[in-house]
Structure formats: structure tokens, C-alpha cells
Length: 392
Image 1 (cartoon, rainbow, N blue to C red):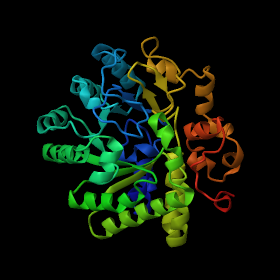
Image 2 (spheres, rainbow, N blue to C red):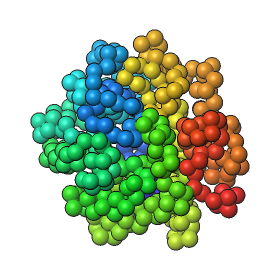
Image 3 (cartoon, rainbow, N blue to C red):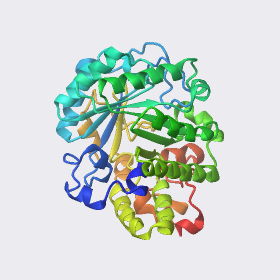
Image 4 (cartoon, rainbow, N blue to C red):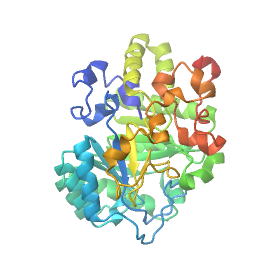
């Protein structure tokens, strides 16, 4: 996760994170990526069911009942363990998390245990009543997936009317006083929609947007050939930076992040090195605190059936199941070969990743993408768009 507004527009200084000792339990949410202890943010896919048919769904979600989901009681025991382990944030996801009737009860339990609860949703099920309920239980944030304007978004979602319903969900969250933001997955089909997303942020006064790079998992694996090229990705990141700054200069700042391609960090730094060397030095310090990709260390995933993964995309390799062992025990068991290696994966990456001067900042990027394309999880991430000259 690379904070474009934090880094490029200077809304965060290194001293901001240092003031809290860089400890996960003390850092406010907007500084959590700069923690030193990297207590994992846990994505809990509480259901595989979804009311939409998104073509890039990493969970292969379907609109039907699944009989292997953790019960409410099992979910609360999981949350108790996460809280005791020091997990700062639980992200409730799916499928579509709002199809589970006990989501408010589970999210409220997380908040009562001292964790921040956020949800990742398609937004179509957020009625005014549901939004008020989520506000009352202390939900910190609602991220609503939107991959373009109506025509493009509805094609991605597989359901006509998904865009309009999501917009209603956004307005209902705002009316209830819940912080809401957009989630946008970049690919060849929607590159032209990026300026329109920024227009939407401004017009609807939406405070936050995350631009996700495509990860080749689930149904997203079928879109590999439609991923943005390296040149297209560079142009997209430059455009996101330009539009972020434009809003800041207009006095309408938004929190803008890019996610799932940590080459973005060095890319932002190299651009600032040309434009503002003094700020570039501060950004380099922040990027060193960030440490890049943290799958299996600073982020983890629990699936609907209790399986524990390095992140929400790595569903072909489970470290164990919370029905048999607590998450905290699974997560710290370094006798598990892959878990041990992911805790220090910079030792194992190969090729241009191993000799890259940005390895400490990028963290080796996404191992899932490398494995999906090459069959070798330690091979270079094929989505890294930095040139040989930029990494040498």
C-alpha cells in the first residue's frame, strides 16, 4: 500500500510516525503502514457468497449458500485471539460481507475488543438502516468497489444496476457519518476511467480512493492477458499522482493510495527526486518504514472456512485452520517452511528482484503474481514496471 497523497503531496512526515514510536497499537490508521512491529492487518473473508458476479473476483464468489463458513461463535473466538495477538485492524470481506446477517454483531465484537473494524463491499446492500447500524457499532471505514462509471462498472460486476446501487450505498454511508472510500482495480479495460473516478471523488465529496493493481488470483487469473502493460501502468501511476496533486492544489485534498504493486514506492521517489529533492529524501525515509509488500508478515487472511493464508490472494497454500489452532499460533509457527521464508523473503527472491537496489523498500513485490506466471514463487514479479536502469 503506497500513500500517494501522503508521499507525493506531503501530507505525512517521517516525524508523524516516529511520534508514536511506530507501534501498531498506538498509530492512527493513516500511519499504520509505517509501523515497525508489522502486526498483521487481517482480512477475514467471512463468506464466499456474493450478490454480484465480478469478473476479477479473487474468491470465486457465487450467489448461493456455502455450508462450511465459520459460525458466529467461531468468529468471535477468532476475533478474541486476534485482539489478544495485537492485530490492529480486521477487514471484513467476502464474497460480499453484508450478505451475512451477523456481520454487525461480528464487527461490533471486534470494536469492543479494541480493534478497528473496516469492511470491503460492493456497496449495493448498504441501505440507510444498514449504514446507521454500521455507524452505531463503531465501524471505522467502508471501502466500496467501483471499477469505473456505470457502463464499465456494471460490465465488471456482471449485474446491470450495480453502479447505481453502489452510489446509493456511498450516499447512505455519508449520511450516516461513516468514512467511505472507493476501491478501483486497474486493468486495460478501465484505464480511461481513472480521471472520472477523480471527478467522482470531487463531485460527491468522497474522501478516499484506493487504486489496486490486478493480482492474478481467482477469476482475476483469467485477466492476466488484460493486465495493463508496464508502460500503461507507469502512465496510470503518473496520472494518479497528477490528479491527486491537482485536487490538493484546489483545496480539495483526498487520501489516495495505490495497492498491490510496491514498485509504486520507488517510482514515486524517483519522480520526486527530479521535482523536489528535499521532499524525496523524506519520502525515502517513509518508504523504508513501509518496507513494501508484507504478505505473511504485516498482512494475513482468514477464509470463510477458517483456513489461514499469507494474504487474500494466496488461497492455494494454507498454513492451517483456526478451527484446529488459533491464528496467533499459526502465524508465529516458523517451522512451517513457507511461513518462515515469508517473514524474511528478501533472502529468497531471485533474478532482478534479488539484485534490485529497491528490495528493502519494495519487499520483493507480489509472490502470488510471480508464481501464477512462472510457477516459481520466488521469481521476479512480472508486474514490476521499473526499468533495468531504475533498479540498478
